Length: 320
Image (cartoon, rainbow, N blue to C red; front, side):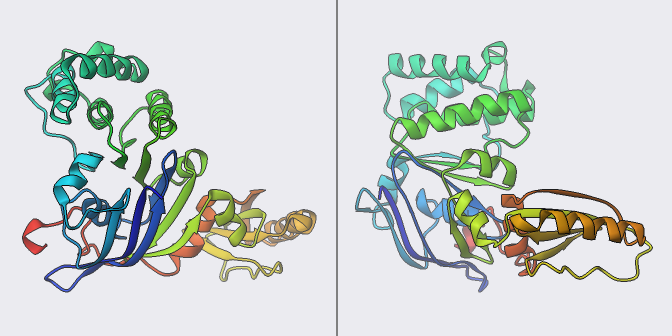
């Protein structure tokens, strides 16, 4: 494995245990995702891998080298797009991307060539020479990705790279993320977007309260839910109690909706039951479809509850 994380633990001076014995490995050519609530410990984990935060315990290795012992090497081997916007006001995208390429060791010609390819691929040409202070949040996110990808390291860490990006360019961005993996990088991506994670990632780790509570491919995680179909019931606000599922699978309330796991061979009975509930006035409407990664995520995390926001995603260096 290219990136190997073992028993990674981070306890802040305040006593908050942000990461708690995390084991994770990512190979070259692979896009792996960290999925979890705000405060689950995702950004704390990423900051430790890139050498910005020292772990309390555990190990981080890239190509067998100890990243905790040599955080400078970690920053050379890792490309990083932070969760926060990059402070590039006063620079144009052209200048910012070229500068990062050269800081990461690329020649001027190579940085320029790579920047031209990224700008074309992400459809950023119209903003190439515009002061970053005048760019929208979505365009700034794309520029920040290009800065991380212009001279990519062995490991590429992307923290919420699609935030504020419009749907068309989001697809272009995912194509470039896949290209990084295809070119041999190990990509670790933090996201809240379950739909994107299911569609675009090779493996996922679900974090809650600083621990990995599930890991695998999207298909493996869905199989672990024990349901092939999802019956979504919209509960009538006048209903006095929630219906009890007859299917022996997961039942997860989300607001005024009830997500009910249903075996594939029980599709007919599920529709009949939902129609009965609708006639009885318990349910306003219903839909039946394939189980999704969102069902897995909600079933695993929603009942556990997220840790308090005191376990900050953006770490406080004074508490490290």
